[in-house]
Length: 127
Image (tube, rainbow, N blue to C red; front, side):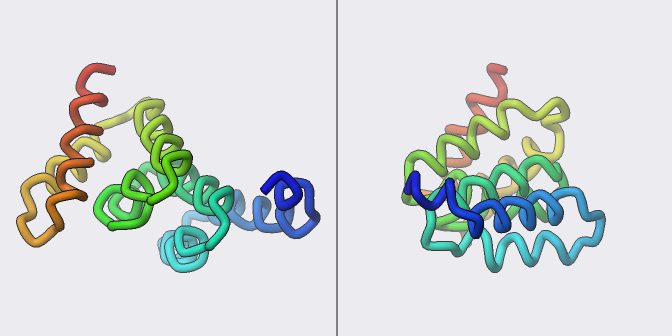
C-alpha cells in the first residue's frame, strides 16, 4: 500500500477526510462513514476512523465503536489498533466512555462488538 500513500489521489483523499473532520456540519459524519469506513483500502479506513474519533461527537464515536467491521471492530488489526489508540489519546473521554457503556449494554448488538467495547472501556479506564 506504500504506492497508494505516495499517490496524488491518496493526498486528495487525505485532504477531503481532513476537511470533513473539521466541518461542523453533522452530514460530514455520514459522508465519512459511508465513503471512508467502507473503503477497501486500509489506509483510508484508518484515516477515516481517526477523523471520526477526533470529532469526539456521539454520532462519530458511535460509528467507530458500535459497528461491526468499522473502527475498533475493523478486520484489519492496524485499523482497529489505530482507532483504539486514538480513543485512548482523547483529552475528553467522557463521550467515548458513554458510547462504550451503551454498546456494552445493548443486547441487540453482536457479542463480538460488545466484547471489543468492554476491552476498550477497560483500557480507557486505566488511562
